[in-house]
Image 1 (cartoon, rainbow, N blue to C red):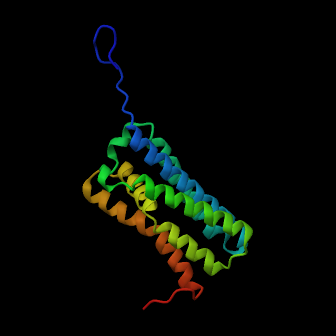
Image 2: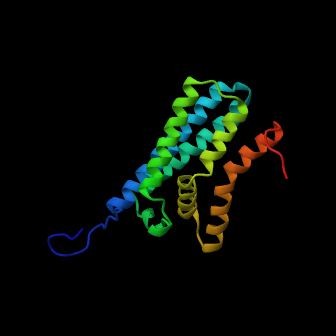
Image 3: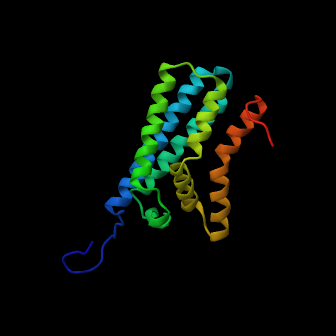
Length: 172
């Protein structure tokens, strides 16, 4: 902002409309995925802690997306060519919402729930969210790389470990 005497006051950095729409779409996906994990926590009370951990992580991702949408942290986002397209975000959101409706109206086994979770975690929007979250906390390139890799793999590994322990997945 420039004041009447042309001196610089507080400068506010806001994302462009396209970036804001992408972030809002990714946040909606995170919240929809969180809803699925919350439902699974109710469906599988013996694995409630597992599902609630995933649920809380997704809400945390959504929180960071909201925070980045309103702060200078937007400058830390990946370049635009690395972002998911609005088409991919919208298709992912339709998929996630469809799965949410499906699991609320059809009984699902633990194996099916884990397969759904794994597919959700491997989506492009999840990768973007994890990368952005890592960017927000990284202090240098090496730390950024490590955090991105860790963030992308954490949920996938957790779900795959559960699938292995239940005999739904076998190492080849």
